[in-house]
Image 1 (cartoon, helix red, strand yellow):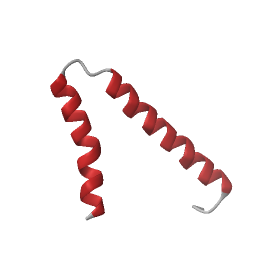
Image 2 (cartoon, helix red, strand yellow):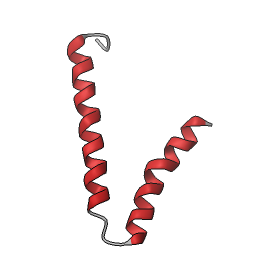
Image 3 (cartoon, helix red, strand yellow):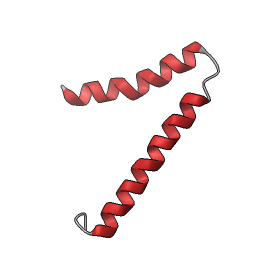
Image 4 (cartoon, one colour):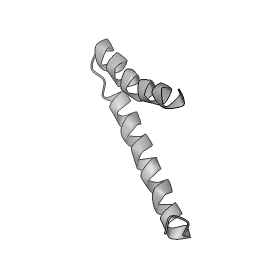
Length: 51
């Protein structure tokens, strides 16, 4: 099922939605600490996965 064209299209759309949510969160930051926390939540998990 994961190899079907429809499944791949759905995954692409889901990834686009995830990116849009992250960008909206960035624009909704009210303070510097909000921005720091947001960036930490995005980049720290990615760094841990690379190890």
